[in-house]
Amino acid sequence: MQHDKVLILDFGSQYTQLIARRVRELNIYSEIHPFNKIPTNFQEYKAVILSGSPNSVRGENALHPDLTNIRGEKPLLAVCYGAQYLAHFSGGEVAPSNTREYGRAKLAFIKENEAFFKDINVGSQVWMSHSDTIKSLPTHGVLIASTHDVENAAYRIEGEETYAIQFHPEVYHSTDGKRLLENFLVNIANVNQDWTPDSFVEETVAAIQEKVGNDKVVLGLSGGVDSTVAAVLLNKAIGKNLYCIFVNNGLLRKNEFENVLNQYKGMGLNVKGVDASQRFLDALAGIEDPELKRKAIGNAFIEVFDDEAHQLTDVKWLAQGTIYPDVIESVSATGGPSATIKSHHNVGGLPDFMKLKIVEPLRAIFKDEVRRVGATLGIDPELLGRHPFPGPGLGIRILGDITAEKVRILQEVDAIFINGLKEWGLYDKVWQAGAMLLPVNSVGVMGDERTYEKCVALRAVESTDGMTADWVNLPYEFLQKTSNDIINKVKGVNRVVYDISSKPPATIEWE
Image (cartoon, rainbow, N blue to C red; front, side, top):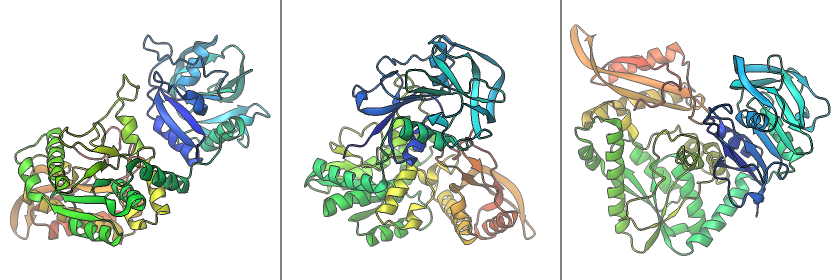
């Protein structure tokens, strides 16, 4: 089935992925492409959205998209930078704002009978994020909405299906943002809402069967949501021709290797567990630098995985749980303006000695969509609701060098924290939680004796996608009990702290 598609041109806004996700929530398929790499098949897209940008249209480094075949040809929605670009280079004027227009604002004027603002009223809250402002509209521009401080908050261009807004409809703070996107895409651009988890499963299974045929596929399972959903999709498509390998890198949570292995076998997956703990610990011996630790863990995983894959005969394909944000974020600034923050181990290929073709059943969808697809496949909600867990595991939650004793300490601390969250009914209110073992000892007193032992930091954040995150205000009673349990039950720890940093400026993990 051919779905209607929406093209999002990325100018480097931190919110570009959010635009795509909001469009997907309307059951409409969307794709993000760099502003300077418009797909050659762009005629297949029913509508185009221009994202915001940290750049200024007035600067020498203004980003110039080629809109020759888009404006007047396709329904076009320009957000923030896009709106300023259309104004500045089409007969209008953009100037620095007297006050930086950032944060909540309310619509103070909406032009009557505008399809774009159907069912949206004056007083609706919108989210501003720009330091320039549109002083005068472009040629044939028609003002359709204002806030108290921003006159030209929204406009359309006469004779075209082109709309422009100086606020961000994609963020939650814009109360009617989803309605605005629906008005544009469904009512104005006539895009079909036919992108659903059920249709994704059906089409993906058929595509895997066509692509792979009767070949054998090997997949490395991590215990996480992405690789699990990928495994169940592949299993549905090719059954016993899927060979799953679950490697214990010695940096998993307490008892996780045995528990997850049993869970997978209960799901009917053809899975082999490989305990390579010592091999990973040996590879990490004496390494303190976080990036070097990641590389050592990645290399050891590839070696172990390769050893196991070679024991299988006639395997032609390697399956990976790559998801859409991995694909987008691995496009660098010159290919598209969204800067790459860190390398993703699933993207960018594998060593030459693993001469397998790649199959990535989830590479078109976001994390929240992966969970919806998993629910459609009947995967246990508890597994789908698991917090994200980093690929390098506890290796990047132990700051400094890694030893078996440090892993033991952190596994015990982590188990008390995570089990406590579940017992107190807090686990599902938290997006991600974990404990960090800090490379400092501090003085304490136990009984009548002086101790000089480790400090651990607990971290719990709420987020929708991990791109931004706030620390969770956990109850003092819970933190008090958790701290007491950790200090009393985990030998080697005499101090517990709680991390109250948000992202940005801090990251979720400490390394």
